[in-house]
Image 1 (cartoon, rainbow, N blue to C red):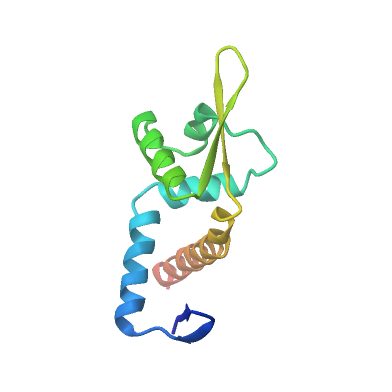
Image 2 (image 1 turned 45 degrees about the vertical axis):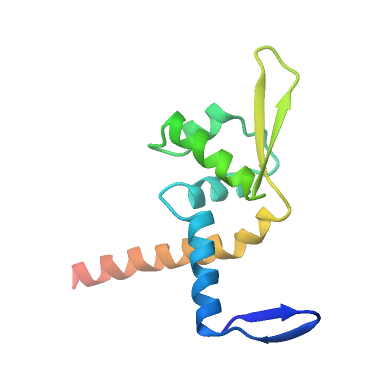
Amino acid sequence: MGTVKNKGNVREASCQEELTAMRDSIEILGGKWKLLIMRYLTNRTSESNHFKKIQRGINGISAKMLSKELKDLELNLMVTRTIQNTRPVTIDYAVTEYGKSIIPVTDMLVQWGLNHREKIKEDILV
């Protein structure tokens, strides 16, 4: 069960509060691309991540979709956008400190996905 902090008091979240929190999470991070973008950026925190580099690094994402998803992630305080003083102008994207809170979630999803692939391979070979 999740916990809710209210005026310094901590209590267990009700089922409805948990479902609402899950819906909020899915609205912010749901869809085909947002978690992939976040994972891409969190794996490259020491690099300069400009738009075209991200697009090339995430197989299959269109420029239009990447632009939309980056704007949504920025609006939700998950990524920052920094305009570089270059010609032509480049914009770097990075995960915010708050955005780094998603790392344990993506770590778990990655491990689950790796385990799932192995499970499927094992069952097919049996």
